[in-house]
Length: 277
Image 1: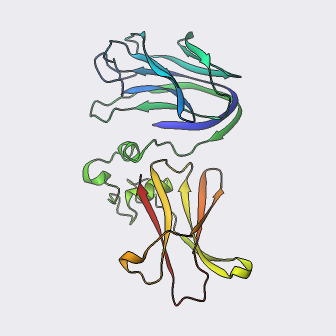
Image 2: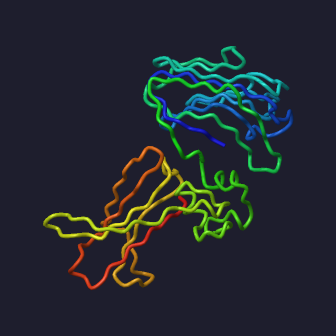
């Protein structure tokens, strides 16, 4: 589970956790924590299973992971991260765990609870979540990757395949991932494609279609349109197709325009294609 937002300027985020099912002899991939990411760098403070060196409180900054902060058997506590100007500070139970310089641009921040992908489940209760920032913008897509998404929806084995349709609603898992719908519920269905035309002035009128995408579009998902004049397998291509995004706050509408105008050709067809990167 990952609940993200985009924070601009100064920010302060904190939460209490309790009843944490974290062990003293596990994998640090099982953890809960607070993350903030800018570019390729990230800042995080984690309460995890015990790592190889016997510690279970970890933090990171863009230069390195830092182990050995503390070893605790506590199943409850408080995590906090503050940015003021170009300085970021993390706190564990009110005590400073890390302080250093940081970039000043917008950061994608989140609170997270994560399993390492094995059956040893992790659970915790979060309370007293507090968030303030100079500017805030929700990030509605809470999943880091397709495997994380299907795991969180309770799917595994063949049911978790990108082309599987475990809820029988006619939409494969990968389409539901890109649309932000639930692949385990037939009542949650990706919206239909919207077909239309666009007047491009002297260039003529062009066939278009629009699709709804989750915001932000997952980094491991390639979304494109392809065009063909005869529907044969080798004739589909994405060249010269224009794509335009319209931001609706909680989702994105992406419109694709055919590469050739309506009229000169006997026929033209478009299709939506989603693939994992």
